[in-house]
Image (cartoon, rainbow, N blue to C red; front, side, top):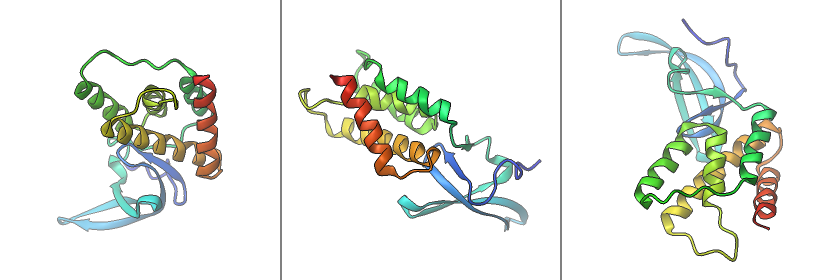
Length: 167
């Protein structure tokens, strides 16, 4: 059973491990003697192209862009109070990494909220900053794609929410 009808060329999709990409085409390719139908997904920002078998798209967690309602929920999540567990950093970092790679916009917003530091707060470690920037980039790209805007506007919107929350 193919899921070809669910996704179409030029449509933006979210691939959990890489974020927002655009389906360039749907092509057939022979791999190990089997003919496979593949989504060709381009991640322009990363200069990367990914080929996903159409029958495995749901299994790997590929999904359409979030709805504006989900984006609104993500923004509401950003406004919330940071929830930092008292677990060891390695455990928390692992959980943050899982949330980022889940492709779930709300989970990604939680990571941004929890790792955001206001100017007057203590400095972030290198690994904290890396996770924060990865989550922020995923969040920004998806919000920009959903709003048909550019990433600068989405980044400004997220930044405004984070600054007002800190106040």
